[in-house]
Length: 116
Image (cartoon, rainbow, N blue to C red; front, top):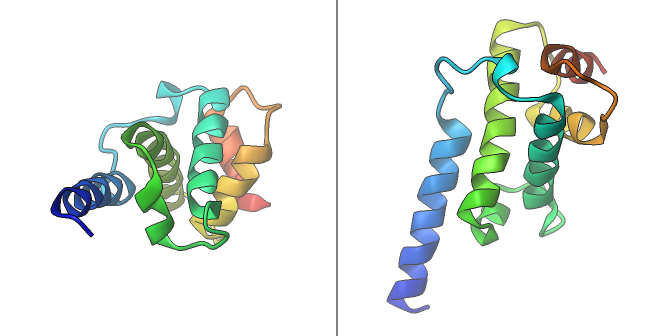
């Protein structure tokens, strides 16, 4: 592997890691629409399904824009589960949200995905 390729992969790794692990302080569910959340969660699931498995390394082949959209979904799920009773893992919640389209309220969408 060339040095420039390694540098690019490390940069993507850093961006994705930061986006997926950093808390979204001050972010509220009302700051994003339910439709946007569904699209962002579709992006998150697509990243993890690229290689046919639920592994973090699958995110290495994504663009920064894809990683940011996925990070929004993951962050909103993490924040919701931190403040509500939810016993499903983030991947299952994101999969449920990615399939939902009839919700106009993000909180209700997250509650439904959490309870499913």
